[in-house]
Length: 57
Image (cartoon, rainbow, N blue to C red):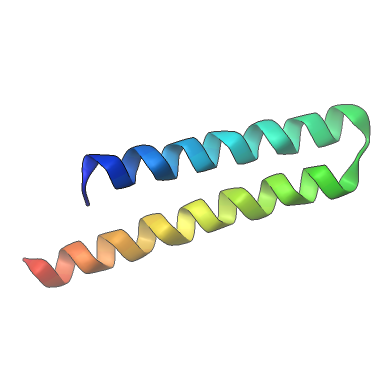
């Protein structure tokens, strides 16, 4: 996994956590759920990159 991919996934994850926190703080379930979805997408991308790396070795 390249450093750029790692950084991008981390930014997506942190953005999702911030969005989830904002949603909780304001009571906006939609924003909270969007944050959770962003975090899940980041995790899936990370897992996909790890699988690609495993096959390159």
